Image (cartoon, rainbow, N blue to C red):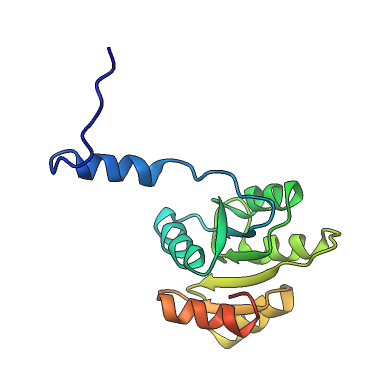
Amino acid sequence: MIKRLNTGDAATAPHVASAEADRPASPPQPSQRICLIVDDSRMIRKVARRIVESVGYAVVEAENGEEGLARCRAAMPHLVITDWNMPVMSGIDFVTALRAIPTERRPRVVFCTTNSGARDIHKGIEAGADEYVIKPFDDASLVSRLQAIGAA
């Protein structure tokens, strides 16, 4: 016998919401713009996901640069938001390797990192990023940077 949860019940609502938040997203449709978010912080991926979904992207996530490259080789996204400081492969190494992948459509790349020095920003742009956002960020700052590169 299968017992159905009453999702309107105040006692079960937080558990249902939590389960829905942890459920993998459905695969993107072929006509959708895809954003790959590469960050070892689950919380940053969640915040960035909410923002880019609000401007019309389907989101794919990766926890590090190596995983991000594998996802790009499988299906090149339209937009990539990446951290700089990650285990396995740094954001700089990831962006450099990403830019070396032959592709018909070059994705827009935004660094989203705590590295805020002028030298870091220059190095990120030199590696192939189109834009640079300093953490912590909010909806308005990320969306304005996406608009600046024609990605929102």
